[in-house]
Length: 81
Image 1: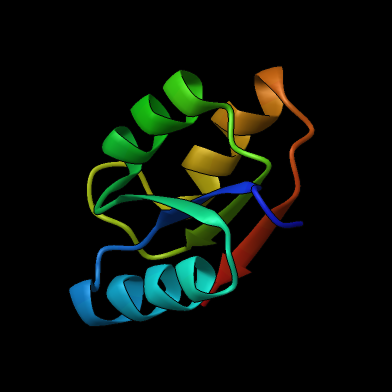
Image 2 (image 1 turned 120 degrees about the horizontal axis):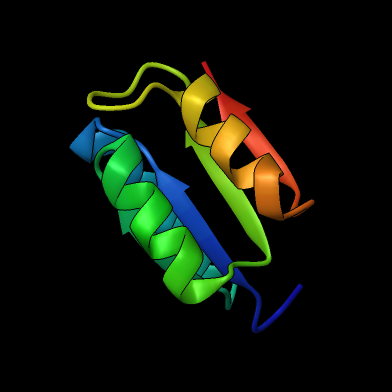
């Protein structure tokens, strides 16, 4: 999955930073968002190849974000709990 774009939607800065750093080290392009609304904006702008999604998010929770993503896409989503 080299050159893949991965969107990390996670409100915890330390966890988000670690996941993004590991993805970048593996040669992937990582985009990030700190809440559900920002995550959806990035998702629709970037059309990532994979989403890493936290369930407990401010604004929209992870389940609501997943519902919106599924309305238009079947992109793989990994849930963080």
